[in-house]
Image 1 (tube, rainbow, N blue to C red):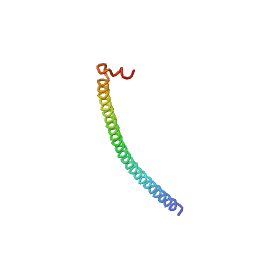
Image 2 (image 1 turned 45 degrees about the vertical axis):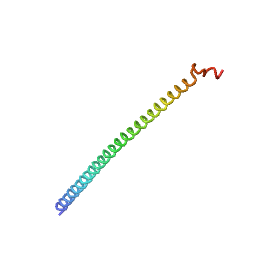
Image 3 (image 1 turned 60 degrees about the vertical axis):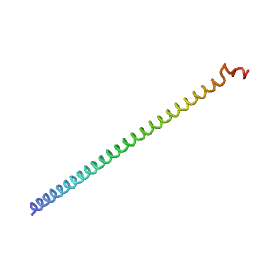
Length: 100
């Protein structure tokens, strides 16, 4: 009798150990699956941010380009205006002497 009980206890403890191992294995598999999904999610997010950064950089550059064009245009208008101002008040018309 004691021998049989010992064998049964050993048998149940082995079964219990196998069951625990199986559960741990399943948990590990589940964790790996979740990690894989998480990694895929992060890759997707980083790709989105990379694209967003590229788009914002593009818009920033186009904004700078338009600012530069506006500056050049206003400078050329200023130069034209100063040219007409110079020709209007040049030495031939005695413009400088009008102010003295």
